[in-house]
Image (cartoon, rainbow, N blue to C red; front, side, top):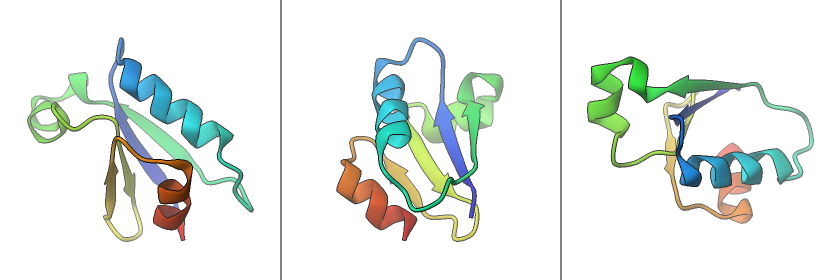
Amino acid sequence: MELIFYTTSQCHLCELAEALLVNTPMPEPIPVDAVDIAQSAQLVERYGTRIPVLRRNDTGEELDWPFTSDQLLNFLR
């Protein structure tokens, strides 16, 4: 499994989500690809009011902010 982390610069909520992701204990590391939505009009349209968003590449499931450490762990199971 890999994650896509939809974010953008100067996004305080994105920084909070990133800190939670980094500090949530996981049994093994999960690769995360950060994507700045500002690079694509299509991504801005889809995620502009929802970021930060985590997306699993194996299932396509998305987790919108706000989320807790427990919600994150459940999302990753």
